[in-house]
Image (cartoon, rainbow, N blue to C red; front, side, top):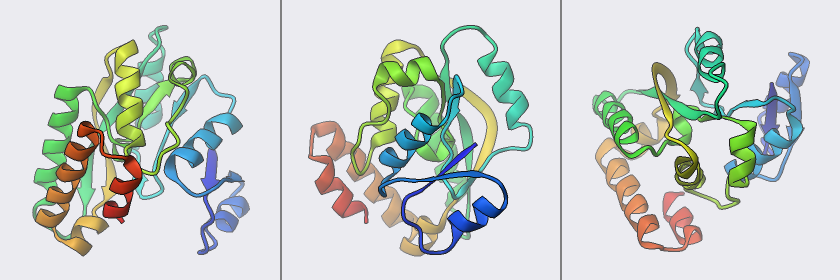
Length: 192
């Protein structure tokens, strides 16, 4: 396992090193950090997990079965969003359905893929936002995703802090703008 620190100031990297994790540093940014982690890892199977997302207890077994098909494979888990808003279960259910129907996954769903597919796509595009959407689009051209029903648990802090409806509306506005070709740097400014 590789943990990529993008300049944290809360001693996360030091705590992880003391726990014997392989910690590397990278410039800040999800795409930059995930690509750095993939370069530092020699596995033929890659799982990209955000720091605020937890895997299900049987994730290793589920992933082993998924990867052991002998074919190039990529996919994601279903998600539960944990927080105080009563809308979060609805948001998670809709996110899982949308992903299953569209073949597009989000980083909160713990993306996984074979190294061969990762390399064929050129890795995550080095952009400040929508890197998960873009790599999903590239991967989808190579094969359909595996949509696991096992659930990862991710933080709902953004929804709790900014409100469920404003966050839902913002996320859909950003996706719509990205689809229309609005420069991703502009979208990242709105996302902050």
